[in-house]
Length: 147
Image 1 (tube, rainbow, N blue to C red):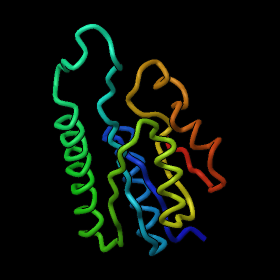
Image 2 (cartoon, rainbow, N blue to C red):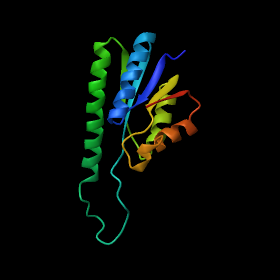
Image 3 (tube, rainbow, N blue to C red):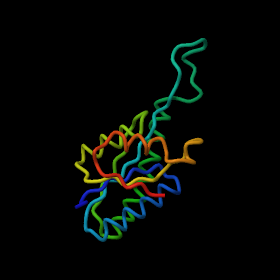
Image 4 (cartoon, helix red, strand yellow):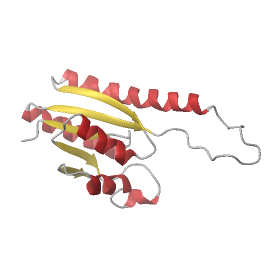
């Protein structure tokens, strides 16, 4: 059945709840978790008047968001280790989280994806999140959407 489950997390409370559910599920099955956090790179507009002046250094920003994502994943990995669950963490950098989720699920040969119904972005958080909808539309794997 489901021996390797991908659980993407953005650090939001609902995402943390989905992680807890996935941990409990895998603990009962004796499977493995692949825990993913997608760090979105600094988005800046191209050439315009005054170009070349950024409010912050884009490279520094990218390094910081990747480090924050890893710190969050390390906390989750410590929990899985304490519960005797086999897990691995992945930080992926990309502008489209759904693409990274689908890519990592395929790359790590996951059997299913467990994810929160929505993350922490804008008005879409009131409905099934746009990233969740895109994952559902772009993968052939079973996806368990948790609320």
